[in-house]
Length: 301
Image 1 (tube, helix red, strand yellow):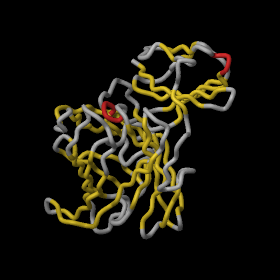
Image 2 (cartoon, one colour):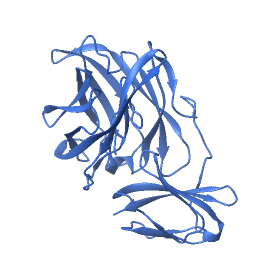
Image 3 (cartoon, rainbow, N blue to C red):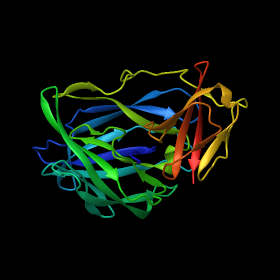
């Protein structure tokens, strides 16, 4: 589950001259930037730079702007290095190249990767191993181009704090649907702003591809209302379930992960709601009978 990074990041992509699985120079991604503290959804753009030579390899720089997160999130630049070979993408972690995705994989191939954990100063201090399984594969024709996709699923459910891997499709050139890479620093992502679903991807060959109902650069406001004293969620944090008061006016309760990805929903007025999900931070979105929505962050311990 986690993907991205809520700090200033420059990503260096190592590729060969005939690379087909990494995005070309000039490619652009647009994601939704959400907040746990207000309902505004902002665009978040990542731009692929031109080719350059780094450490003797042909490379590209991708710049991610800084989401406005407070301490203890790192404020420096975290560098991630990627390379491509034979339809596989590799990431440089723990002083070695590790496979991030293999587009020739079949179900149920498995692999593992060590994810570096950053402390508040931005320096890496430890690594957590994530075991990943290929759940399914497909090939889609996008604007005349056949693109392979693999659905990656984490199959070890031990606590992975402060980084979490998220399940989802990883597509050639386009990348992970809910973020640039499939993990996020939970300690930072949950503190304020976090990157949610991909809105658009564009490059000179594929053209513009839209994945969301939101326009690529639109700012969306007044979507939701914060939970008030009239509607209380407790306990928080919780290890098993949570309770709601004022249940007679509740139509449906939705649960989302940190990326804004839908997890489950419950219809009707239930005072106690079970959380059959992994440990982590989630967003509870409550639809009332009058059409209003209330949101609240909850921690599953």
